[in-house]
Length: 361
Image 1 (spheres, rainbow, N blue to C red):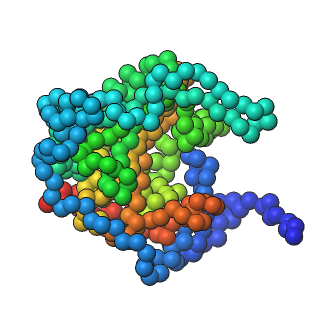
Image 2 (image 1 turned 90 degrees about the horizontal axis):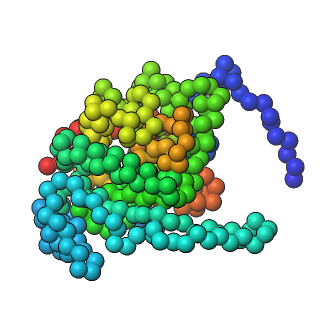
Image 3 (image 1 turned 180 degrees about the vertical axis):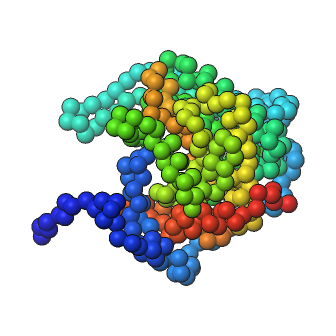
């Protein structure tokens, strides 16, 4: 059956008044060019699905069985130093290897294509204490972490064979974290991965078309009507993106154009550390539990190009939906069609704004 498509695009002037918290609708993500289906009417459905286990209530300050704690043995005969602040080492079980020979495969039809990929994976122990999290670390400790991330991004990105540096943290067992000791990871590689590549393309197109920075324009719009702003400090803001996919997804943005960590001033480093602590403490207080998430920094590729449209930003992608034990599953429609969420970003922002910034006791 053939249907004629309506090619008329509704303008801002023609917009129909609507309570967007009541009806299903699509939201566009200008950073990736993708859309998310928002279905706020589904929040009343009963839940009879999987219920997650709560994380341990108490962790040891130093765990002799933990391979990330100071002085403990890792893979082989490697022993961690008695580190006092941040400790970085090359991952003992890396997803990327440095000594991969250049090779490619192409069947000539564009169907069977492969290319070897080289890179380096590092582990960043962000504290010697086994029982801390980003949410329970002090500002001084978080500043040290940001400075180490900056050093690693700069050092790895300076290598001629590295064109992208991804810094991220998986927090909590339900996010696949295999060790509760506070740590982040860095994967640096030859190829710019798909998602950062799309963000690069979209931001470059915005810069060419409008002469401005996409995410700065977006942040100014959010601050002018702060229904999705969670908090601000002098140099950074936390927002639930208009196009957020995960129920309590957030983004941290510097208020001035900064393409990567190396461009941050001392005040902006302090502001970033402050924002990390405040955001994660709000998360913990949302459901009264050490909150699981994947967090990652997106920075301009390290391919030697200027990337004048790029803006450093931080994604927090937490899985919890209704409580500390009920998570959002990306299955079915989400895997086969497009992402979908049940609460609106505005509702999520309201709840996160209401959360305390005091650390859980």
